[in-house]
Length: 416
Image: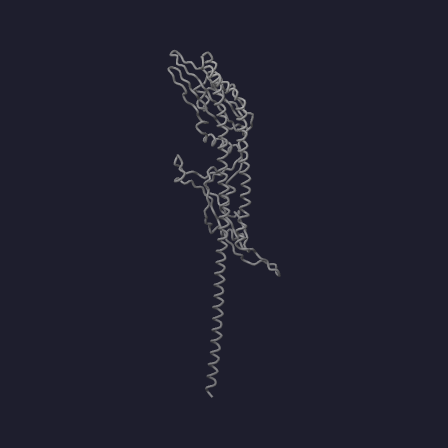
């Protein structure tokens, strides 16, 4: 009789163990599911972060190419502007040669055999005078057209680059995951919002920008444009100095001023005194006539070296009938910080069809890149051995990843 209660008790204890075991299994399964869910969420967050970084790098690549193209086109505008100075300089050099040959032909008219050669040369150069002026004027107009085209191309490509960068980023995000979308792009709550790549470049032709443009053109002149002065003849007490150069400046109206002067002058040392005889000269300008003061600097020191000829030549200088305005171009704001791009990607919020309430806590990620300028000394060393600052005149812009601070992550999370 005592065995039945004992057996019943043993059966009840086994039932409790089974229940406890079942609870433990359920708890372990729940914990395992939670771990898997957390792992999946972490993996999803990592994937979103990578997608955001890829999209930001794509934007940065387009931005870097846009800035490099602006640098190339800025240099092209300066190169074409210098070409105008070279063309005008060639015109004055021709005028000087034409007048010199004419004067030599007049002096040598009484010398047999020589007079025929000098007269033929002088006649040929004088016949070319009008075609030369027409051709020079057309060449200058062509250079002006190219400069204006480059300026307009800069602006158009800037707009196209900005729009295509947005489309590219959207394609990358939506092509990676259909449930992702771009939420913020360079949001105003970011601490470095002032360093955005679009805000750090301006397209303008204000007075300061025009002065910088003229300064760069002046510093970039080739030796022929800057100074074409040397001693041509040195015989006994007679010397012939050939002096000339082209100068560029900015008119108060915003037009570019090109002036060019070339002179030939005979210097005679007569022991008691010196004599200076003009042999020939040429002067031409764009926008503003050449100065008439003897202390005028530049022009290959023609005013100081050949003053008599320079004074006579400037009085009959030729004006090209063209108007040439300094172009608008992109330049970089000088604040010492490299521009950057920040992109926030978030899961799309899907509304429930019955309750029309959005699912809480969508995952999101942020990517950031930095545009930086670097001129490697190994390949392109500067003559002054100085570190070149960031600018939009050398196509040396690159892109690299940039970390985002935890404070900015908190600011972004508060906005989502």
